[in-house]
Image 1 (tube, rainbow, N blue to C red):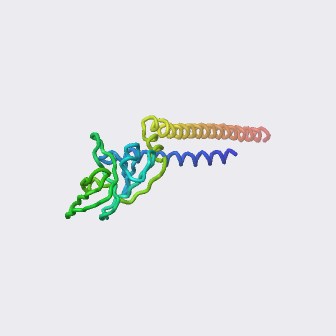
Image 2 (cartoon, one colour):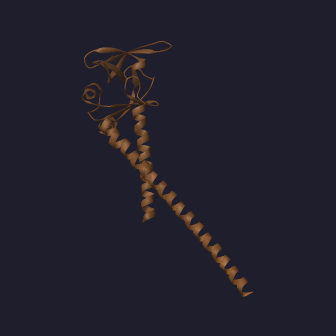
Length: 201
């Protein structure tokens, strides 16, 4: 039973460590627009504003967009726009493209009017939407979420590992003391046997 519990705890430790590493990556890998970007993928937590500006999404969704330069007329793209001095993500259909050797400018049809978007502000066109995961990620990335759902689990793992280390040290010390005591007893026993032999002679 003890072996099974140790195995379960070891598995739980690995899951906690992987979960903390992944969440820390999400917190550290923010781009200049304030959104998480890992490799070729950008992650957007859809809020009420996002629901209005991003097609086929709902509040609480997690939108994952793959970065892509292969954009043509008629493609639905995702791009960064400024709203109240903050960057938000919008989506729109490309109606015109102007390219040079280094960059491109896209004319995008919005809900009310057309806007021009530089390629540097385009996330991409390929996307997946995951229901409710955006709300979960928002909680995890908040200060309270980070404190209780990241720091606390890793502290529990650390304290348990420290406890195990101390227990192992104590057992090793006890074993060492027992070995010393047994060795002394053996020496005394051998000595007494020798003394007995001498007396007999």
